[in-house]
Length: 332
Ligand code: NAD
Ligand code: WQD
Image (tube, rainbow, N blue to C red; front, side, top):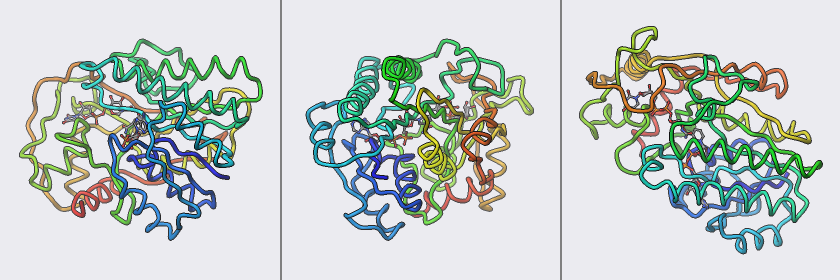
């Protein structure tokens, strides 16, 4: 299939392009590079040995309807994967309009283009954040609870927009993939997560402390009702996540389909730090500080639906996630 990958130069998008190409598909990346670099496209080609024939790149903003329609007019597209969102929770609180505009307009423009050009397959990057403070493990059948920030709300609203479009268009097929905590990098060390400025997320913070770029990890609270008091999350290797998209595309059926992409395994902050130190034989200094506002104690998936219906399950464990994240950071 020929897949339009909106946001394909970014962290998860670039790994998914690799997985798609390795599975024999070709990709058209549409990205405005607001949080990525064009080199990612060269790296995708380098890893897969593919050329401009299978990997096309358009530097466009996917909220720009005219530019998006030009791409759809010029290519025969079989499906769309929509990664093109802004994702920093704190920034979304400071600049809500920017988040609502970018994340909702991109969903609306891309889905409208699909309807106009009769493209039935649409895969959307959602997030475990839509579950709110539900009881763990999070399962797809749960009622969603309120989100705690504008970023999370854009994911919940995009899910509702796409669900309504499917209700009104019986031959449109949408899969909502709810990611848990993606970490790690491709084993080549060529692509990975490189956040701008000081990282908000745990793994890039850990790798930068290990490298000496940052002094000390601040662990946000050790008084949660968890195994050791620190927050528990379902970390998933980004390559497993990428492969989940290929499975989702292959099995995309009419209507709205929802899958958790997680491992089903919870890991605490202290457990992750220890695993990182052991896997890479390097020390990560840390201190315990106050809880971070908006954090929940535990978040992990019930991952059975994706296994049963997509035949997909995460294969890589915490040690591999820590090794690959470190390899990328050292190379970067
Ligand atoms: P990322 O920032 O690395 O990738 C997003 C890409 O989209 C970037 O290359 C950016 O330049 C591009 N982009 C953003 N707005 C655009 C626009 N209007 N037009 C064109 N390109 C645009 O982020 P990521 O971690 O790869 O996340 C991909 C998607 O997955 C996002 O929608 C994010 O919200 C979602 N998600 C991420 C996580 C996570 O922890 N990384 C978890 C759950 C869901
Ligand atoms: C993980 C754990 C922190 C940093 C966020 C978004 C979510 C999704 C994934 C996009 C928590 C602790 C972290 C640090 C720490 N993104 N921590 N010190 O908050 O689970 O999820 O990214 O959809 O929507 O909210 O991920 O990596 O920030 O935190 O102690 O410097 O690490 O408290 O327990 P989170 P995270």
